[in-house]
Amino acid sequence: MTEKFVPTAKVVDGILILSLPDALSPVVWQMEVGQSKSSALEVRANEDGTIFTLVLKTPRQDILEIARYDQRDDAVRALLTVSSAMEQAQGQIRMASSDTAAGRQYGSPYDYSVPALRAPSNNNTNSRLKSYVFKPVAYISSALVIFFILFIITSSLIGLFANSGASGTTASNSSMQDGQNGSMSAEDFLEGR
Image: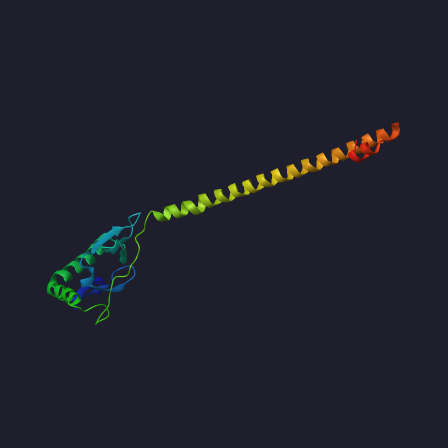
């Protein structure tokens, strides 16, 4: 039964057609060989070493996952199948790349360009740091600044009202004392003594 699920690869008209029925998710994959002359195929293990992935690395540092396997030997067998197909189709590869150089551009007759995928980078860690550390710190510090400003404003207003109220009671007390002692001159009354 496993003989039915053997990976195959062919180059037809400068296009690599890769059939991987033995992968965890069986896939038929196509790529224009002339566009990916400097690309590399690689077998990578995941973090815990239980799953092996056949990937394509492009000159733009894009990493494209082709298929995943349970066993490293199966992934290497798929890699060797691609290598064998590329060796057998050496003349077709040169012909396809010369057609592209001679003016045959994308879209005629086939356009199987490699999609632009971004490789995982360390910027993801920086964005997590910004969102989980810097944003809450900025919110807390902004709130503290606002509370400090409000505290200064309210304390100065309380002091202003306390001083105006104290001077008003002092003036009335002095006028009462003057009124009890006798008469007051007009100048003293107007000046509030």
